[in-house]
Length: 212
View 1 (cartoon, rainbow, N blue to C red):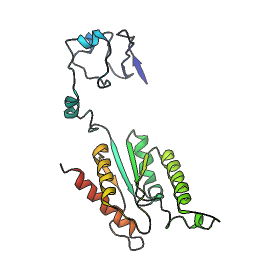
View 2: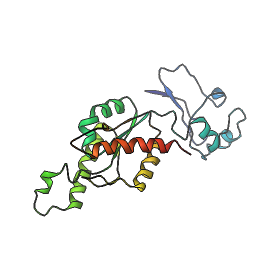
View 3: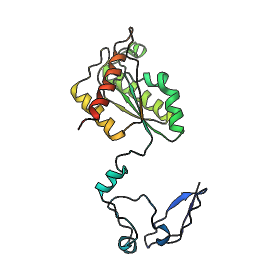
View 4: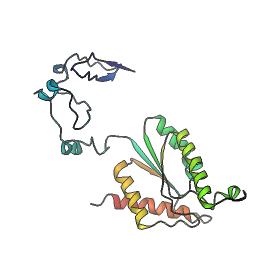
């Protein structure tokens, strides 16, 4: 998918561009006035460090440009009340967007250890910790198939016990991910009170995340 240059400095930095790009470069001079991604604080050799025709970005520069904050990255967030909800409620959307190159983060507020685990509880000697481990394993496998990343807050199940600490966790996820859109439950569900709660906390965390 890429063409690449011959090494241009002693430690063999190689720059990549798409094959359909008309950009041609064989030296640092050819890259004047171009933007390239490099690791912050890493040196690529004396020639590169002393080049006068490049802007040397500090962390503050990168923050303002949106390079460190993920402003230019296509990201989405899925807030799932229970560990199985995201699969059959948003699985198609997650698969579609990850295949399009988006980063999709799934947050499970609970493992669904009570309301979704009736068959597990029928097994002899089953414990709460084991149910959670099994449900976590299932959710990790599902997220992997769909191409998403997943995180568990373990807020309990039937009912969810979403604490201030959990709110802080979800706010931190919003701030680091900066999702372009969020998928969660409907605000009304007369058969499962955990679902509207998940929708409410997803919205609350979004509002708090934008505050200073």
